Length: 88
Image 1: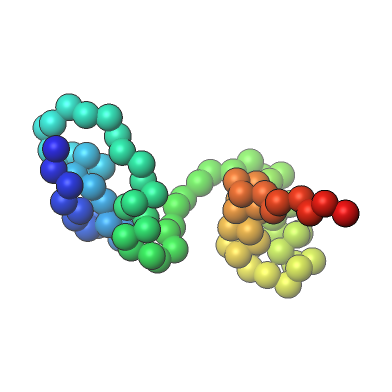
Image 2: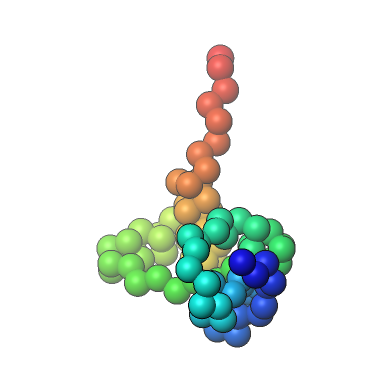
């Protein structure tokens, strides 16, 4: 299996050959954490959200004085990696 990384033009990030279709080798998809860690840059994605979710992000971002993008990234990161609860 090839371990080479290449630049994926549409993503602007490093991607493995299995992600770009550059290999015909049958194998399971490896973890993307190594691919993203190699670039060390924030990534960009496009998502389609219901109108009420966009409104909630807009309202929350205004309350906190953040851009909608920054607030949405904060919400996603907090949901995926919740802060550890401290014992009191």
